[in-house]
Image (cartoon, rainbow, N blue to C red; front, side, top):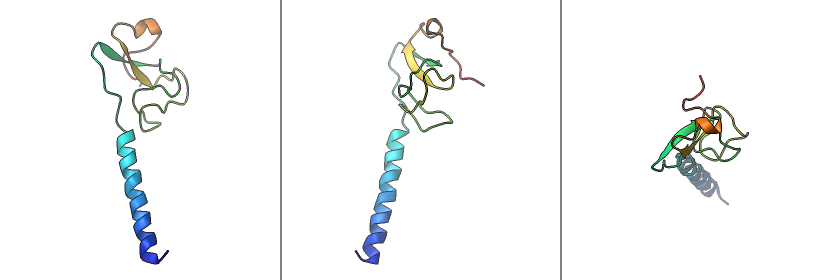
Length: 87
């Protein structure tokens, strides 16, 4: 492979990674009748990102207070979650 082809392959790889990160950074769309609930998401089942990672499906532990997911309206408190992000 010549020098020019290597540079083109490297640039193509960087561009592909950029597009992949844009797609992964999208939150799960909120459905009608749901609300955000912090602290109830299971590992890998969160609906969006935090300061720890890019986005949905990346929670590392169950019930992390900073992770959230959509739940049916009125059920967050019953599940032991919080409606507001931790400070």
